[in-house]
Length: 93
Image 1: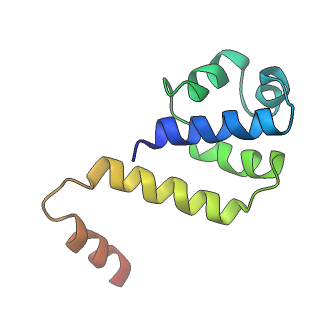
Image 2: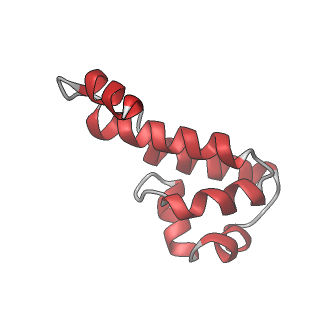
C-alpha cells in the first residue's frame, strides 16, 4: 500500500465531499502548494497533520493515526526478511 497516494486521495475525496477548497483545507494544515502535492501523491503527509485532518473531517484521530503508522511501517519495512519477527519483538518489549 502506498500511503502517500492513499492519504492524499483520502484528503482529496473528503475535501470534495465537504465542498471545501484546497485553500480552506491548506489554511488548517499546510500551504496550498504542499496540499496539492499531497493530494496528487507527490508528497507525504506528516504525522503532526493527522490530528488536524481528523478534526477537519470529523474522523477518529486514533484510527487515522494507527492506519498512518501501520501503513508507513509496512511500506518502509514490509519486504524485510525479518519484518514479522521484528514487529513481534517490538510488541513484547
